[in-house]
Image 1: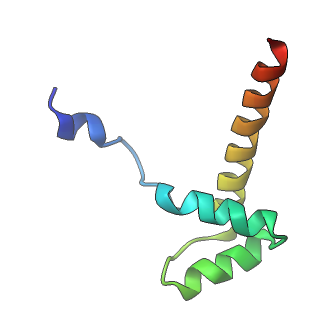
Image 2: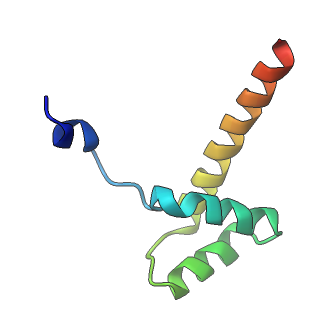
Length: 74
């Protein structure tokens, strides 16, 4: 298997590019809601639905919670 095959993923591409997830999380932590973040991304030319923003925030929050639990278990 070559590098190009490993890099691509099967299925539909993510609605929010991985490079923008930290910025989405930052906007969320600043107090913006899912729909306000969606408006912000759309103004930048990124076509995204508010539910995709919600999934990105919730997925990252779950990962962070798991990491904190693992750190406290030691």
